[in-house]
Length: 548
Image (cartoon, rainbow, N blue to C red; front, side, top):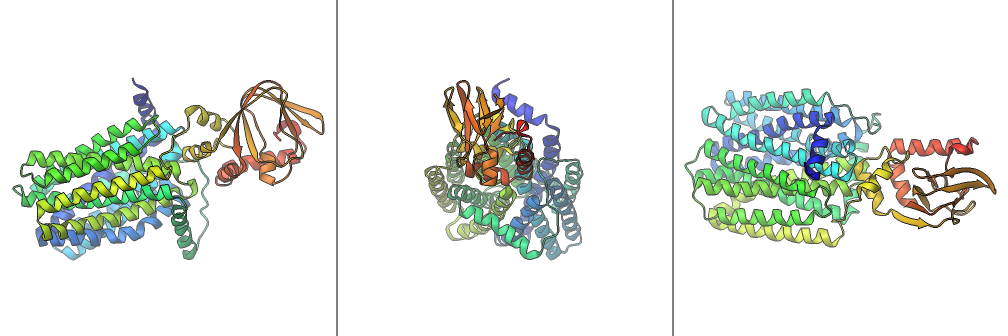
């Protein structure tokens, strides 16, 4: 078994991740099957104009709801938020089916719009949960790859099964089946038990909720590279909106028409998406995500260009496979990038902003394709869209690299050493990765004072190997070796050093700057509690049990 395969296998054996993925595949299947069904329903009623307009109207409320829905994942136990979101989807999808059977199209559109808004509870919370159940950068990438694979299996099965049901029955039955699938997802996600962070579930006023959501937007404003990734995800949303309408439009304009052909194109999209998740596994143990982003842009542009002159189902399916491959690679790599760069306390909210923008972009893409096709014709419109995708994605990826966002992840050795420290052991992998960026590795010969009693404290030290002696007022206190750490008291209390630490052998240290230490520790309740207990014990006079 290769190293990457071993990492993926280890991650998939985690019971928490398995429960997460079983619930997620039902959600993903339902999301893609119902989207195809509602577009087909609208197309049959009013053609490309109504289907494009419906897609925009359906997605706009989801755009507004997404950041607030995602904030629930930061505020409350995320596994419970996930379960509630799935349950709401089950109810609204079932209501859509009933409205369609009752020949009430307006009610069907309203219920389907509610379902689309409820979907926004799922993906941002999922993306925020993954860093909490992984331990190393490789595990985080592997968890994203597994999630992408599972989601894309749903993306493949949704149109495949949905298209079959459309051909045999109609869109109402698609929504009914998907209601059952999402109810099953809600049941599985109830079994999740996350204990990695403490949740403040106290009451909060509406104004404070709005302010908290805006905090996520402010975090984006202060991080240009992170903004570039969100823009790329939004461009991916435009492409998704284009292809969702295009699969129905192309089937009607160039093929024999009907739900079966549209379902076949949607299945091709899903097959490509599964392949993209497999390709994204190449990120495990690698530093750079920009090549995957550039590849996504090229694949998309090729798909639009070739599809512009295609009339055969096989060629069209091939190009939709390209679209799925590109979208999946973009989604997985961008998610990994966001998890590496986002502050932990805002992670779900940032993914919520991303989800909202993506929904808005999908709405714009759905409307855009109908407008451009009516103005230019199908073939020229696809060529123009392909060129626009290549230029926008290529330029944004280039800017992401120039801003320094495509950074090398820390080595497993650094992460392992940080996780062995009592102060840092509770941090999620994304926080550890950010902490390691400013980490300095220092080699100190024997007989050198690393810190001196009474001086200003500016670093926290972790001993990798070697030994040091701790003295207070010239009196020997203790000897520390590999695995120990020191220096947190002066940083937490903004006070002079309480002891002198001198190497007694050649010693290798990791040094964490004051700002990075405080940002990591104060942002996580358990890390803060551990560090505070160290200070309390020292001030109580038990000098032999603490570090200076």
